[in-house]
Each structure stands twice: as structure tokens, then as C-alpha cells.
Image (cartoon, rainbow over all chains, first blue to last red; front, side):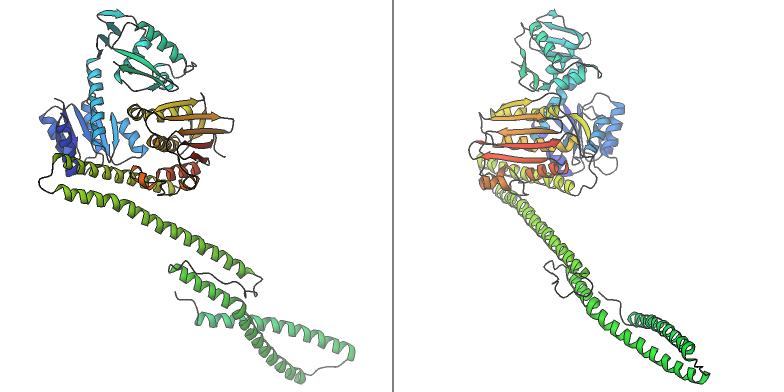
Length: 223
Length: 360
């Protein structure tokens, strides 16, 4: 069972978030300040931290910075009333993985925590499995039913990205920004070429497909 | 408010008297000198100290009296032409300060100062009118906000009380809790929107514009609704020209697209279509967001950008009437235009036209 640390100074909100997470199958621990959170982290290991920004004493920014200095991997999620872009930029710069603006919808919190944990697992194991298809990010190898499928590095990276976020559409530009050099002159349509190649190489794979979302981009759909 | 008067007024009177005295004395002396010189030159009369001394005293007395007369006439003239209109303007200003925005200055009899006071009165009246309409807007806004806030609060309160009853069936309990959740969400959305709108309306320095790909922004905004169109069975259609770059504030514009899109998805039934198109020429970029939802009548269409206006009372639960006011405000800030075409039962098209580069 995943352990989640909730750092939020409002007692009622803290309690309700913890109760909700506990009912949703996580093991949540509530702390009312950063100091309490440090103590809880000495006492036990957590898989994910949800933190407020505006708290008395150590604020969320400082707390997250301290945690990040010790642990590069743990997923961090800000849950805050501050919706200005400056706070968001600062949050992401110091290393939070997700940012939610209060009032938060508990169902959305649940979804985002699930996604963060799944990605953390992928990131930690460096392996991704969809049915009989398996990708190893350290060796840059992909296997279907134990047989290796040869992919170029860029093909591998694109596929790894799509499968890390199943059902989410990426635009051509987003993929270009991530997997092509910044100064490249290639038009976004070059992505189409890669998708065609990927599809033909994965024609035998029945566990997922790469779907074109017309006019928008591509997504991986797991069957 | 206390006006300067009394002693200062007296000093001003004395000052003015001295001025008139100096002027009259100067004039009379000049005339006398001229007159006496001519007299001496042409008639060869010589004046003795005695008769000159007598005439000088008499003339001095005359000058003193004349200056006094001038001062009195001047004071009376000023009272009519300056003091009266100034006092009326001051009185009106006092009433305005006290919060009476209905006050107006009647202009007719300010003939004294070449119509200057007419201009001031005119300007004052316009000021009072503007203040009055701002005040009306403000009170309307407060009335609307408190109504919009109190309604969901009352609902939450009532259902909270109902939930405290013993022996409720599981089904009823869930129903009550559901209503509370829905109302609090509505309240939260509205508070968020009011804060955003407030920030936009009080914004003095506009965020710096950056150049970016508008089509990509539209695609990314549209993709945020992927879960919604999948769940609701709505088909997204895009017709976005590649490579349209625009210099504007991306965060503000995202607010526009998100509000237009969320409206489009909100009002479109399952099986409907939401389409986004982008066209551009050298100067302008035109974005259309079109849905096949319930549409609206022209009367509703004419008012949708007003704060708290909601077309259909029965759909009021779905929003707070601030989204499009926000959109309008942002488009105004960016010096663009927004228009709406709609037909009941057919759908709605919002068209936003933006300059690709801001005015220098």
C-alpha cells in the first residue's frame, strides 16, 4: 500500500484529505506543519508528499526544497490557494511534480496521485510493461513476447513517452520540443514519419495502438 | 468644509484698494502734470506753492475716494461674476463628496467670466454622472455577488442540517451529500472567477507579451478537455492553420480559450461537435470556437458578456455568469474583438479577432 504524507495547516482540510485518501486505498498521514512533517519522515518512509504552500513557520517552498535536497525521486504535489503563474513557476522550478489550486476536487487529487505514483514507478524501475510488450529505458530495448524489436533512440523515446501517459494526446509540437534539437528546422509533420515507422514495427502488438487524434496529435491507447 | 474667509478676505480687500489707489494716483498725476505743463507753456501762468498745495490736497482726497469707489464696484462685480458661481460649484462638490451623485449644476447665469464657469459646470456634471454610473455598477455587482454566494451557502446549510437527521436511508444521505458537494464546487468556481476578474480589472501594468505559436496553444487548451469529450461522446474538430505566431500574453489568452471551450463542451449534448478554427492574415489572427449545443436567442446573445448574466435560468446551476465577462475583459485588454453568432437549437460560434502584434 502506498504511503502518502499530507502537509496542510488547516486541521479540517487536512483531516478530510487524509480520510478521503485512506478510503481510496492509500495510507495517508496528516501533518499540520513542516516541522511535524520532518519528524514523520524521520520515523517512516513515504511514497508521495502532498503539501500546502502558505503555512506558518517553514512554508511549502522551503519544505519542498529541503525534501528535494535529500530525495530526488519522491513525487511532490503542491495543493495551494495561490494560482498566480509566479508561484507555479517557482514551485516547478524547485522540483514539485504537480500543482493543484484550491479548492481541489478530491476525485481529481486521487487521479493525479495515481498518475504520479505510476510515473514514479516507471521512473524508478526504468521499465514499462504493457501486456506482452516491454520496454527497458536503461538498455533502450523493446521486446514483444520476448523477441526484441529494434527501435532507434528517438522512436524509443517517443513510444516510451506515449506509453507513460496512456490515453493522453500529445501534439506534434510537444513531441518535437522534447525529442528534437531546439534549433532543428524540421517541420512538426516530421513526427508523422516516426509514427508511421513505429506503427509498422509494432504491427504485431495487440496490447496497445498509437492513435491519431485528427488535427491535434497522437496518443497511445491500451486495449 | 470650512472655506477661507473673514480676515483673509479683508486683507484681499485692502490689497485691492492699494492697487486701485496706485493706479488712480499714477493716472491722475500724469494727467495733472501734462495739464499743468501745457498751462504754464501756453498761458505763462506761474503757480505758487500755496495754490498748488491746496489743489494737491484736494486731488489726493479725490484719488482716495475714487479708489474706494473702484474697490467697492470691483468687489460687487466679483461677487456677482466669480463668488456666486464658485460658491455654487463648491456646494455641489460638497454634496458629491458626501455621496450624492444626483447633484448637477444648472449653467445659465454664469455670464460673468466669458463662459469659463459654464465649461467647469459642464465638466462637473459629466463627472457626477460618471461617478453615479460607477456607483450603480458597484452596488449591482455587490447585490449580484451576495445573491450568487448566499444561494449555494443556503443550500449547503440546509442539506447539512438535513444530513443531521437520524435514520436517513443510504440513498437519501448520498443525495444530500451530493448536493452539498455540487454547491460548494459552484461557490468555489465563482470565488475563483471573481478574484480573476478583480485582478484583471485592477491591473495597471499588463504582463509582457511574448511571441508564440497560437495554433499550438489552441491545441493544448483543447486537449485539456480530452477526458470530457471522451466521456460525453463529443467529437472535437480542428481546422488550425500551422505556424501562426502571435505576440501577446499567453497566460491571459489561455483564459479566453479555456472559458470558450469549457462553455462549448458544457452546452453540447452527446454526439455533438465542438470545433476550433484558426485563420490568419498579416495583421490579424481569427479564432472561432463553434459548438452544436442549445444555442441562444439574439436577446440573450446581446447580453452574455455582462457580469452575472445567465441566458437560461434553468441552466444557472452550471455556471456563475462570470466566464464570458472574463473573456470580454481579456480581449479588451489585448485590444481584440469578440463576437457571437447563435441560433436557438442549432449552436453557437464565438469569433475572437486579435492583432498578431500589439500596437506600438
